[in-house]
Length: 265
Image (cartoon, rainbow, N blue to C red; front, side):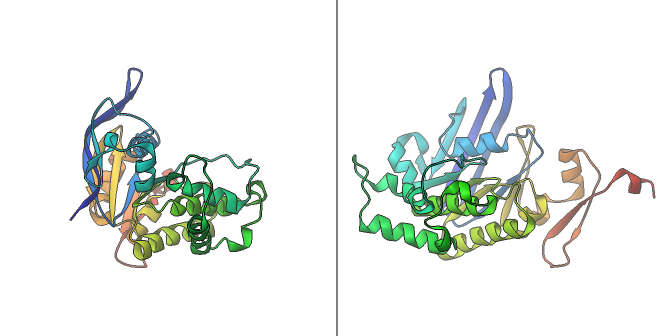
């Protein structure tokens, strides 16, 4: 199976503090790949390295079989779209104008959009279900609506790989499920490889084909949810008692934190 992303022996540090150490793994094309792990484990840093925003101390990153440093910025933006954890929402632009920014990698020096750009933006808006918001300003939207706008902008790039850093953080349950369903639809209908950071292990188990559990900058476990999400593995990484059983929906694990008041019962 062809790899969308290959990571080979990468390391990163902030000053003298190591954040990632000797990571090696690959993500097949068409995967829904979710990175989990406790706070400070290096998830966001890893995502920025894959996106080409930060450069590792050593190691190699290949996107669709080609070293990431051999791409120009515009070429890379045609392969990868990145939705960071936090985006400013005070842009003086409409939703449609923001979505159209995703066409920048395909435009000339003057940056004028053509009919194809406009049609791709309309398709992205329809796909994410935000047609009714097209003329609204970003600061007039809810958190879940803003998230769909930035995902629509990323879709408008026509990427092969979509990178998302905690896209469901701070959203209510209905918006969390909408975003995750949208990512699954993106993978199924547009054959885009989805790579996501998530702090919600249950959403990760429910949607991910494969999970990567990071712990203190190291790979604690990688594989399908049922292999990664055992109570022994998760307790070592998260440092708290956990109950892991099968979800009543079937076919994937469910994780329940065990409060102290229940431990000795």
